[in-house]
Length: 333
Image 1: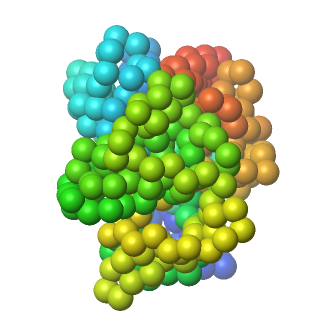
Image 2: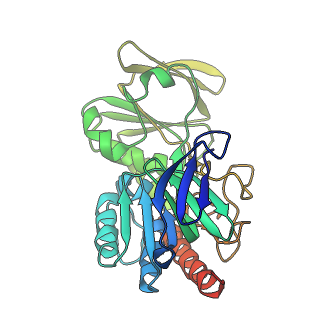
């Protein structure tokens, strides 16, 4: 992991083993030191930025994209104020709200490392290095892979994790969804608007999603649940042409033109290795969204908060901004 070095009023990034192996990134004017850096612009990060700027904190929001996983949800039915709203539309509304405030927004910039340097926090991205008084990590989570035969080969060539992006590509075709939670159910419903037949391959004997989604899936004639089954290989030549599964101990092949993997998410917590994490790699936080390092907070799906919902992420982002603001105000700089 690269690190930042502070020498007088200049920030350097280390590129070797000796003090001479360094190059300058930015010159620091302590009068304009960033109060708060927020990493990630999903619901947690955007909400945190709105709250921090309202408190007149000098805020920098860094993210490689806008909206996170929420932006690719086809239908959101549990966000207060909207009976039903699509992920892209909710993201657009969050973006509009965010841009009414005075903050630095760095999109298409990816955080590589977060470290504590004295009483400041250093943040290294693929473009620059920054120092701030506090930081909120809202880096979200990434879809998990199955790590089975053919997955790497056909990734992006018939295997997808984004139904809202790719559903129209499978119009009139048979497809499969792997998973049994809300994401899998939502994906199956989205695909049923385009595909002729949608298999849901669920390793459990029943779905684990919200009741209303389960009811819609069961009532949909185009969706065929397969319980107690696991995928063991993807088949095809240039792209996916089938999926090999084991159902109740018996192997069988489903002829499908596409597969959507919805088996959960891996927290994007590898940007920091000095805070405490649980066995899933999630950053452990207190009720005040504190990590085990003073000045570094975290919110959203990257944390060990058990309920992974958009509204929960937004609320956690607000809390993190409130408590990090209090930390900044009460600390001697």
